[in-house]
Length: 254
Image 1 (cartoon, rainbow, N blue to C red):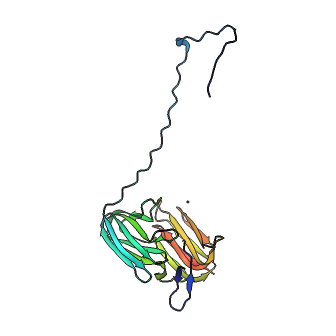
Image 2 (tube, helix red, strand yellow; image 1 turned 120 degrees about the vertical axis):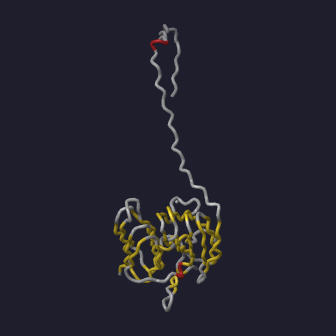
């Protein structure tokens, strides 16, 4: 079964990963009322035909392809490229895959997504960087493909979430991140400040000790496009992901 490793002398945390009307007339022998003349018949007002909303145009996939190889426990994989590209990576084992994106030398707008996703994992103006949980292995294929839309050189490093360094106490940062919370906590508080009017934060909290009614790991998804403070009533240790360009504080609660 997949696990989250707290390293050193801490025990291994078992985690089953996640981880959508007509009219008519007749005669019975009575006199028939003459029909109005054409001159007296008011012109019918044409009923406008509703026009269908145009379907959003999906941007074509980049032609360039980059293969990062295989990512395993204790064995990260790295892909480098320049400009738009599809980036393939294969998972070897049962764990969530984390992608560390470095587009700090890029120019223009950057987007990190996948074919068919409703919204990207991350997007914003260059210079750009962020960390994303791209695969929680629930029903997913071992082979995953990211789509990078950017101008300039970039690097993506893939690793198992079991290889993340556990953190303890209050955590503060800016931009998208994936954190392995090592504290024994009854809940996690997330405070968010947007980077601007178009910014938002999407958060996911996955417990390594609580389970849902179906037996899956307890998970909460929440977020907003305005500043907020939200408490996820899920016990830690576990994983917390934040996707944003703004600033955040994550506080394990006793």
